[in-house]
Length: 297
Image (cartoon, rainbow, N blue to C red; front, side):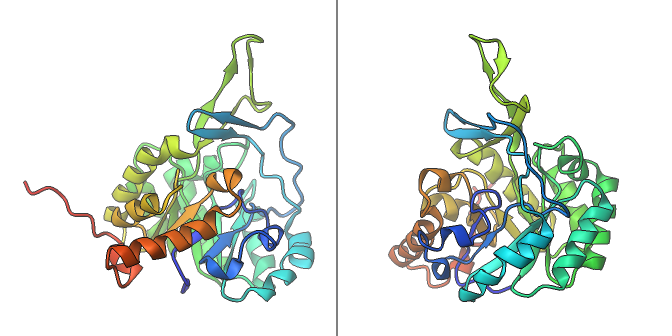
């Protein structure tokens, strides 16, 4: 999958892509990942389901989406106007059979470059993070999804595990084309006045600049553990943030929470990375991947 640049808008922060066409020049970013698409429509959690935190935000949207049929019929066709922007469909299910059913239905549609297997969402009571936290379950799901898929399969890993490198190797060995990380960190917030959780789901996923140092370390560890491409994300706001992730081993990056503060964040980052490379005499942005210079021992 060739990208015009390494900047991808992350799942859950860019709608179905087409909602941003009057705000962002979609041809100026490498691609975007859709909201998680499930077999049937999902309403998501009740409000409140998104709150601001120090240096980030906490969300428990609950994977609200229109379902695979409406996505194919009403959302996907309009994206054909932007052939340079790769459409990556985030796939979610409560069971392995549901994941496979969504992929098989998407296989019949045109206009997608890859699938991103969501095994890491901390905001649902079944599926999601449960698949990404258990080695055996992850291996089985990725293998079944790879067998069903006619397109490259990216596995979105959960940071809520003991060894991110181990889980990445399992995904690779089971047939993943690439991995993306990190998804949000399981977290919560309490209102001391009411003594109640601030989110209706009680817990949610923490994202934004607050998680960047941890996400960066996980990308570094993952890139050392596997041979397939790594897509890095977690608190990326500036071009320098993106460069850090690439130096740590990422082939491409995703920007998510930054789009809430600035809907043009992905396009701004793409232009900013181009300027950074020009000013630092970097001829090919791909040369940054894994180019971290470690201290001599």
